[in-house]
Image 1 (tube, rainbow, N blue to C red):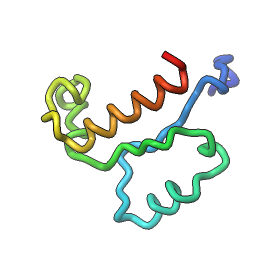
Image 2 (image 1 turned 135 degrees about the vertical axis):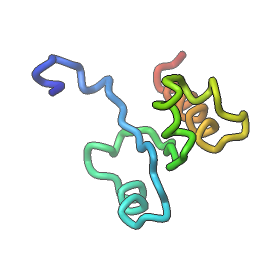
Image 3 (image 1 turned 90 degrees about the vertical axis):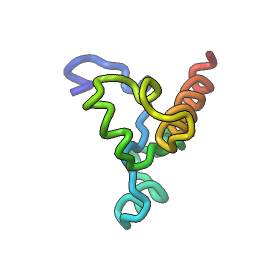
Image 4 (image 1 turned 180 degrees about the vertical axis):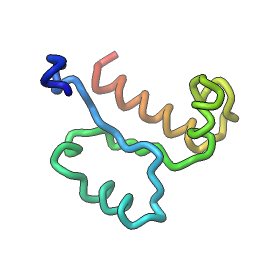
Length: 88
């Protein structure tokens, strides 16, 4: 898809979302990422019903989740990681 659409794949940074560390496959992929994920973000968005509700609310998690929500904190951490990579 990226090649067909002429996207610069160097600018894409993958990350894990809805990861459930209780599942062996999820743990395996996070601990030993495939080649495509080697340069991905280190932050992992955990499996959370709050993340699922973003679709229901049709809004970013920060607009409805409590400030102590684990998923919201993970998204904040992801944003800080992205900002650092982009030198913003």
